[in-house]
Amino acid sequence: MKKWSFESQRVAYAETLIELGKKYPDMVVLDADLSTSTQTARFGKVYPDRFFNMGIQEQNMMGVAAGFATTGRIVFASTFAVFATGRAYDIIRQSICYPKLNVKIVASHAGITVGADGASHQMIEDLGLMTTLPNMKVFVPADAPQTREVVRGVAEEFSGPAYVRLSREKVPTVTDGHDFDLFRAQVLRDGSDVTVIATGLLVAAALEAAEMLKGDVDVRVVNMVPIKPIDREAVVKAARETNGIVTAEEHNIYNGLGSRVAEVLVEEHPTPMRRLGIPDVFGISGGGWELMDYFNLNARGIVEKVKEVIM
Amino acid sequence: MPVVSIEKVQRLRTLAYDIRRWVIEMTYRAGSGHPGGSLSAAEILTVLYFHEMRLDPEHPRWPDRDRFVLSKGHAAPAYYAALALRGFFPIEELYTLRKIGSRLQGHPSMDLPGVDMSTGSLGQGLGVGVGMALAGKLDKRDYRVYVLLGDGELHEGSVWEAAMSAAHHSLDNLVAIVDRNMIQLDGPTEEILRLESLEAKWRGFGWHVVEINGHDVVQIMEALEIARNVKGRPTVIIARTIKGKGVSYMENTHKYHGKPPRTEEEYRKAIEEIEEARRKVYEEVEF
Image (tube, rainbow over all chains, first blue to last red; front, side):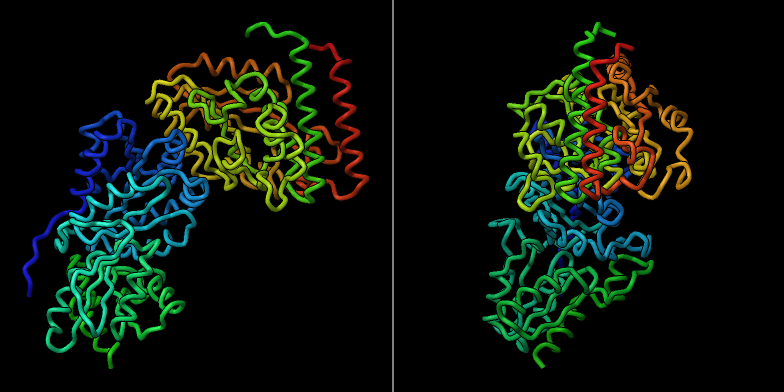
């Protein structure tokens, strides 16, 4: 099995915030008493006047972020994914998305790899909640280098709401950050039999699975960073050029990457498909990677789905 | 209190009745909308838009303008009337309220010139106001931020999150105004979920509290002047008002919270009563 190097997305996020803070002297960053976890505290150390720890008030943080954004600046708001999207959903809907304000929600500790904190803290439906909102754009960087690109991208490439999903765990570096296009999927490995479209932590697992199947099944691996708007072209191309699609994500099986890919395929190129994700159950306590294995969200799980889809 | 002429007071009181007339006109034509809480806020909106706020209707996005957030977004008819009368958009457009293709959405949208924040889902305006006020402090701009809340709206927990936050950040450039008309959609606030003592609640959260008669334009002007001079903390004005003020059959009832005049007769009666009250402004010399 390939040896990966691991790097923290959260630290990459904070470093990029500091870089952007220098470039945009009116940019502000908000957090809700988790800044030492999300790492936004690092921005606060460099730019104390432009960092606001709002306390344990996710709703108010989003409202304040909206108010700040009405004054024409870039606003970042961060906390754990479960609180950022679930607790504050209506504020995000009414006060950020409806008026299309320039608030970038970057949430860490997404998915089950939060680990020991258990189901209450393991956000597995955030992609569903955020993609369903008009005006919202949603991105899942696969590793730390891509986190830097995505954070720069959401700040600089468009004005309007964005949701970026980050992991608690240090994650395997699967890209070099070069030739990055915020709105495009990347083919990390070409193949002609089956395409695995993966996002976030599952991208590394997809590459491992492709390696395991080598000589048996020729697997293409696509890293889908933009969940919304999804890269339709990459999905359709994969459907045309290979014989089946497998999606893999650290998210509920409903309303995440698998659902988005299925929507595209149904309309444009119906194709045999399997989805790997969390089977519509709440998580449990355990180590982050241990839980990934528990839910079969690993290379082995992907191999099984690939075999299913070409049977 | 700066010297204010009788003519100005009369003009403001008259304008409040102009707004009321429009509230009836607009909601009757639309066949829906919220007259009760619009009528109770008429003087508050009048004083804000025709006396207190620093505005330029020709430049609705002027960075140094004072901001207003209608947290009780359902009072949109009164808000739209105030904006139109102040010159932010043509008065004729008021007839399009809630019609398809109109900029006058059922609840305020920032697509309409003069609207600083889209609102409608209760409990969100004060937090947005906190963000605007913090931005003002950060940018060293001296604009002020006004947020109008309904009393029933104070049931929402997010209001108190924002209240705590505003006091923590010493936002003396932020003013909350509570339209204390005592009635919400289903009935009296004190029966549905008790709010009193409101004064003690806001004071406990670190706000300077001023209580006034919310239909007395002079008291509203004075309260806003007091707020200007309070330093280091935000001010809340608890404006005691009458739900449905100005239309006898709409007053002090929840029945017209979200229903316009239902018949031609009701419509005519409302307009007549409002016009009568407007005429009386020039007959009274009590102030």
